[in-house]
Image 1 (cartoon, rainbow, N blue to C red):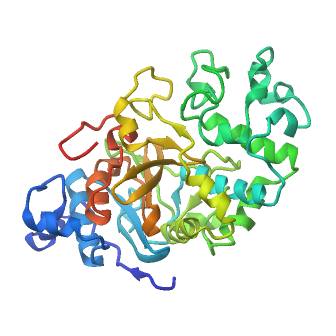
Image 2: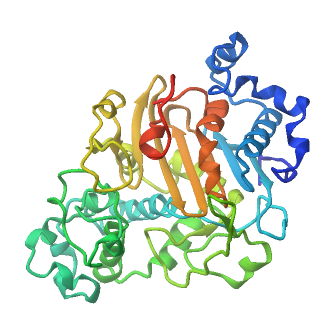
Image 3: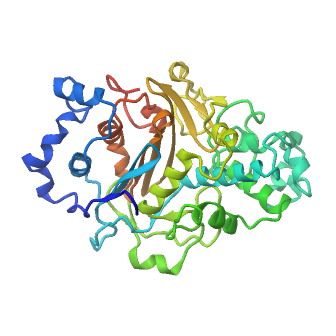
Length: 407
């Protein structure tokens, strides 16, 4: 990859060599550990990406601290990839994780899918605010997966904008409901509630209204555009050669799922090299009009929930308004000292992914991990690389306790 410093795969995170004095010295500026040090304050005040050696040693030491088995990251600055690295192991056999190891993209898929949708908006083939009743050739409840909505006319209020901003009114997934049925918990468009079900319907609109093969469109419009040769919306047998299995919160290994069906909500398999290309392209706005690119990251719906999950919890947090925490299209956004910052996570019980981008700098940190414990180090690692942001960590990770200097 052009203009990329590829760091060698680090030693496994439970190797005691990661805890040597020389490797831990850069952690004097890991902010949640020693926030008051004058040197740390000075470094965090400088608006520059730290050296690759600092990034690598910080990542290794934090992985050691939380027993994280595998982590891959990319740093983008001014829309250019400046650092890509992988650390640790990819499976229980302790094979090394590399920058070309296939990992699960999880809900990072949602943003990539949204980017493709906005290309169709630019071409005049879709309108964000048209009722899906005017787009679909048949009423939604007539499709096999949506019989549950028969008798509830609110499905006609759904639009692509509502679906892509997670304001559909659905639970994240219907299988989370006690009876396993899909239902509205509130009127569409009235509040934020993270929902993969909404992205399923958005995918249905593209397939039924436009006759598109979403997997093929994602390949040609997004993955091929950005040179992502090891990314797909479906399982490919060639992935098996260098594939990451997962690790649960207790360290138990979990085999990588071979997803045969395309899902806009989260079926993307990928590697960190390809994700670096993807997010650099997105932050630059390649392939979109400036209007559509701006629409993706524009604050569209205020997020008032105390946490992202559980999706339908009644608790609210007025502090969200102080940073303007809002839903964009296929991502979340907030304001801090450097202007607009947007982010998207991807998670299951053995995967922890996160992308954070500072819009004014076209600067992003891309984090993929095959170990869900990596989410424990993301606040420290993000601050060490991007400096202080007002990232709402305790909203993103409901288990995380608030601390001084961290929302």
